[in-house]
Length: 289
Image (cartoon, rainbow, N blue to C red; front, side, top):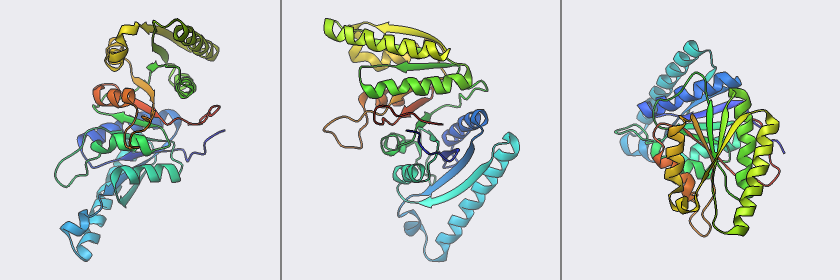
């Protein structure tokens, strides 16, 4: 099954520095894949009604659209990437996810820290967007975009079927950026589980080898399981990773607003390395970027 896409990256913005960091990152990806970019500004529900009345709200919307159009033109002129501008109203995370899902965007690239004053708090909505979006979400904090893209990709692997879907993504990204993929997993002191882990890792090894990508495998001891996120971050920083690739597992029996612990921790703790969060699909799913 191939997912229909519109060859367009959605970049929510509030004109803050962190939103600009995400935009810089998106430009690097867009150039590599010949994507277009849509800059999206969202007027939070109730914002216009609380601050303005009548035609004044239209004046503010028009002013924001004009500023967004100017930014889109500036980016297009300097990068050669086609950039669109769009202003919508609603809850930030719901609107971003709805637009990305319904309009078949390739991905969402967004900042993880918000702005103050009248600027929308884009970053505080990153975790919720990850949960609602059916397309990949790349969370960016600092301006660490590199012209070479994703040369080193760290990919944690567990025993879930969904986790293996990351391998296809790693291969897809790796072939475009000539990446080295770093597979990270945790050993188990349980003999049965360890056999299953070894079989899974062997399968991942074969897939990566067949793809022609360079790759390394790093095994963590069982005792580090409770600190898996920290160890992944330490390893990623040690190898100077350009991307951490994870799945958005949902915690069973908990609100849909909460995503898997590992994903959440990595998104929260990764300061310099972008984190790509892939929404799991049924087994056999493949995705065309």
